[in-house]
Image (cartoon, rainbow, N blue to C red; front, side):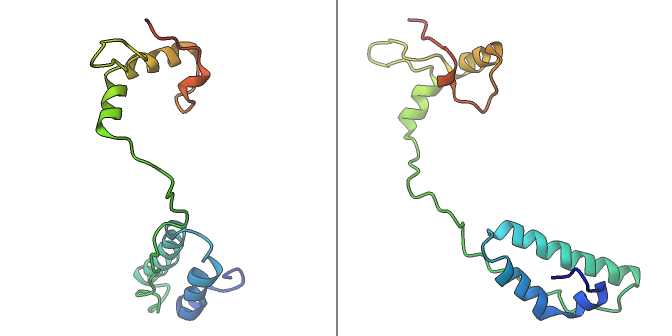
Length: 130
């Protein structure tokens, strides 16, 4: 959009900037559109401060936030009991039987095995101590 235009032309092309942010980039989430707006308006602001532009018309160009593009409706948050079970190392409070390694021991074993932290522990041959 801005390839052949000078900074002064972009600074005065309010409709073009608005169309770029709302039409050309509409398939993107809010974050990259806000970042693009920040770069364009920030560049024009700095050019005005440096005296390269007298003024610009982009100061109040906004990007509407319509929420996340891909809302994960299938995500279920764990209950407090489930989080506590994992944090306690998978110890069944009734039988005191350990079902899994404590989280800190799992992390240590994964480091010792040379696996990356973002990989699930199921790929590592971790066995329960019981």
